[in-house]
Length: 314
Image (cartoon, rainbow, N blue to C red; front, side, top):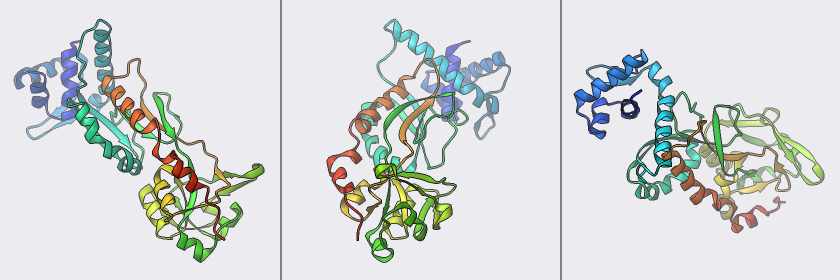
């Protein structure tokens, strides 16, 4: 199979424009169309639906795309083994992440990353809803749960410590729980479809943060909104330390039940489709995030640790 045609298809699938993909590879529009048609004839399937107005990836094209990317990655790896190829990383990286985490930690780093790699573009999908990496043709995603999909691989970015917190105003009005069982009399804020979370305290004493057994008056599907509602005094919620450490340090949020840990062993994972070769653009972005975020997470700095030591309000 002609890898130039495969490369053309991958670019055309990313741009949804065959002529633009051809120009990037130094091909005239007619040549690009002919190469793509030949590839489709070889595969016996239409990879891109064309009309006079637009180009759309077909179902067969979406299924072939991950394999096409793998073929190119294998070719690049083979060239690199013989000292061939360019050190410049090019192309478009499709990355999915939690909108809350991306706004706080990834978006501010993008100018630096783009300056370091002028040949690389980023296509970001930021949402607290998880996307299917294979179906969505994503190169990389950030997730906070362990892998359940055997078709994926992962690199740990950082621990994802969870804590219970509430605003000072809420605690002044409703009191401060001293034991997990006290949560049943409080207003809780929780994610939609959230399951009970086990809390483990001194001497292995245990309890639950269970919205279904308490007065859960606010249900959300967005981490930033949950934090804002908690700061505003709507109730007690479980938040990732990376999301609330600034508010904890400033005093606009107070840790609730600080002697208890949320036992879920959560971590932030950089997840990518399983393959024999990690593409240069994915490896470059992973290395960048590990260096800028994972090496020394700002939410684990000493000032955060001292803030978390605050005991319950009387």
